[in-house]
Length: 95
Image (cartoon, rainbow, N blue to C red; front, side, top):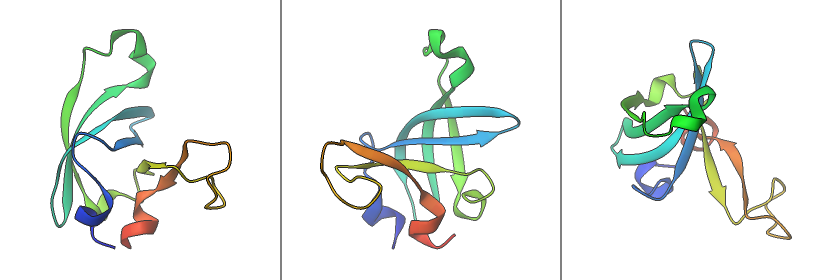
């Protein structure tokens, strides 16, 4: 699946691990081989004003354990009693 078909800028949430830290944020821009996102260090969640702009290339998705919030689906693809779940972006786009 193509990144542009899966992610919607300004709407989709992501999280990933890098250098021993967990980062969360939202997708700002989607391209063929990378996404641009605004993220913050979750250890500093009391200060979410410290957003950073990052470029995440498709070939790094698996190594970063990059996940996106899959709206309206439970982990068994049902929508019963759950608003969604975190899922591996690398698995969806074949990275």
